[in-house]
Image 1 (cartoon, rainbow, N blue to C red):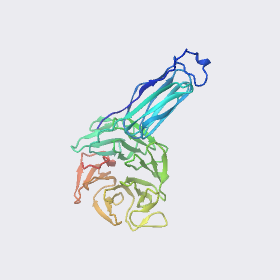
Image 2 (tube, one colour):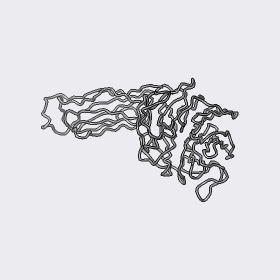
Image 3 (cartoon, rainbow, N blue to C red):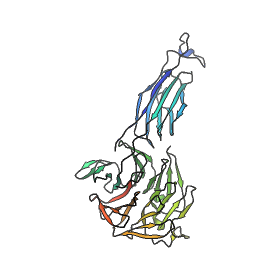
Image 4 (spheres, rainbow, N blue to C red):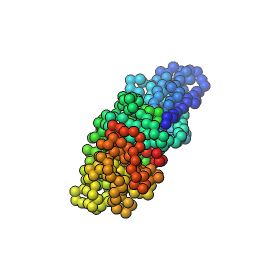
Length: 393
């Protein structure tokens, strides 16, 4: 599942005016010092992948003058920033953030018209393969392939498991369209991205025991900041905002193709939908004065998933069951016999995958209702996610 994208950083041109060389101290505004050079080092940067990932390089303006980058050609769907590197005078740090496939040219110009161009290109990666991604309460993140192979996505294989993971309490997990994996680390109060090359980047921190995460087609990442009782949206540039209202200890999250966010509102025993307008409504039942939704029968819902038809699947941890909410708001039992089920995902064929926490297994519910175990036993799986296209395992 590993691939590499490159940002080719290329020094394209250096302009010079004819005439005698004037010492820098005697230059007038607008004059050009032909002996001066602006260099870009290194000339090649490897970006782990589209999405909220960073890469940087130093730009050295040897003339000693200040300067800045401007976009002069093309389009990079992301944010490209240049700022002085602390304590280095004419050195500049270029950071490319949240970039998507495309190309652009940046022109660096100092205050005495020395110029250099920086070309940035990002290729489109191959689509990620099908797989079931999940977190385990031993601090690891893993992938189960359609052939039954289990890979360590954090840490290294050891004695049938993984060791050396940087996560403390990995909760829910989500996968974007490029194959980047987003992991909520409740113990470290942040959300981290595992790129397709294995690089780990923190995309938001300062949360309070977060649990849920989901990502949409526009690379917006949604986070259940559980004990702050809010859902946060982190866009591709890294900007964070609060969406929705009236939640209490939100846990699992899911997002549909239209950008509506579904929330397992654990403390209110409810499943809610945050529309793209920001309006928060009950997916099933009727709102009550305490913030819940009457008439649903949920008791501490943990995970939530939504299929392409709009049906919503819920793990009800206290009832050890999985329920489904139809598009009309009717709640039905899908399967029971679990022991503290947490994460949940649904594929395009209608199969539902469940992290059966206390049974230490991953379960699959077929469209007909048959429940089977997928993969070996684990040390209590927590969150589960399919690839972005929700291909069947």
